[in-house]
Length: 435
Ligand SMILES: *Cc1c(COP(=O)(O)O)cnc(C)c1O
Image (cartoon, rainbow, N blue to C red):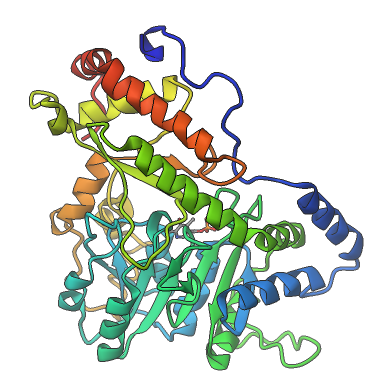
């Protein structure tokens, strides 16, 4: 019997380890930072060490640690010279921060629909969105899979655009041998607790190959000040923020980064094992990994396919919600993640922005920007059918291993094969969630 109907759950004990995986080395690193970090000065050695380690890992010569991925992306947007009213292309299905970093520069996100196979932006749809106001493309490596960077690079070069990589979900993945974080002109990565490279709390990493972009990004990081050589002159050149990372978060992330290659290998193997173990279970479509790319499964996204079970009378939403309830009850954390594409969020539908409709109404932007959800049919379809494993609660990261993945697959086998009648009854009885 399904656990949701009172049966015994498949996963009962602490068989699934949460993410991040914390070792004694991490504990020592944080304690060490605690001992050496006083008196306060900026940047602390611990922060410099994190920056140097990310520079070495990615091959990007200039790195700045920030207090969030959102901050790092905003720094990249500013360093790209994006100004009020300029346009930046953003995938329609991503986390909000890929787009709100554009608004932070008083510029306008223009969304591009997604590819159903990879969940990443569809390069074939990018060029039709470019105008004489376009300055940059944000290439998001969603779920842990790199975007189609060669195609995006060709488009960016043809139109003289900056290519900013949003690496927040994919640290440790590779694109034809090159590491995520190095695939754009600049990159912004998140270190928030759930991410593949975690600061436990909050953090971010900005990276560039260009000394001038580095200088511009650093002004945004610290009050708009220039930091030539030694001391501060306390003279803001531009509007800047305080995006400095917490030193203990930096110490934790630095320690985790030492193990990122091994952790990424484990994630790849776990993802491949899970996909193999789900083979032949109808009703869900596992993710695919294009030739030459590696996936690190920050999320392991599934698209529900009730049609495969001959359930033509059950709405997709009802099937999705029943599956979510049933799988969670079996002890496996699964969720819908975002129920709608970013342009369908109220921020874009109502276009209030900073108030009085800025940036859209501020006079710098081209008039007539609209965010019609029907313009992003694939992103809508993904949001309707998607359930995700991964992140902190059903992590594909170590110490979870291929045996843990077999447990995950056992849950789907129980719910979709052995106890299918129970699942179908659950889907037919509602309650039906949002579409
Ligand atoms: C997490 C995330 C961010 C933002 O990072 P924070 O550190 O949470 O600010 C940006 N983009 C994507 C795709 C993300 O998943």
